[in-house]
Length: 251
Image (tube, rainbow, N blue to C red):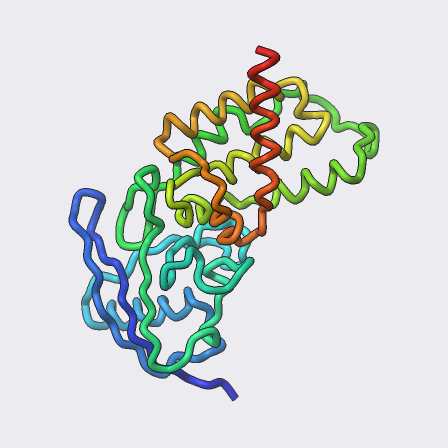
């Protein structure tokens, strides 16, 4: 049988980017512990709409831990208290009745607030557009296994490619650095033969764009990797630094 809990919620409300925001308190009762965190907010929004109040705006899409849209800070933790978990995968059984839960958007100058818990993360898109791609001739696809890739490299590239670009690394970093995101995107191509032609320009262009977008510098505290829902290793930042030094020397 499903248990139910009662919660005290402190949620950041902000009408738009130009407005001053504040925390607003809400109380919810009879919340099933089988609900996901986003379903709990859905219940609150239904209550607000029934009372002719403005519902809480928040990002979501797949609700399967794939897209990274569900970014919010829960009790000071990006995506909540569980490791390797996105907000949509966090369930209410993680909390107990009477808990006070503080919910706010990701905090970074490069992620301006749009409304309530929604932030504009298009800076990540612009970093990706600056070099996170490969240029190849179009045509018929190559035969399987026509490009031999060592398994160690293939596994490492796959791990780096698991980054969903949610921005938890930025929200957790005291400098609001996007280095873990950039490192993952650069590394996944640097490890594969398809990424070799633009290897040097990619590293330099993406780092330059990160700085241009106003993200902070990396000081290797490790908070980014700890908050990452896909467990992107801090070692990829070390790999990126080697890629950048290689690019500088060759240029």
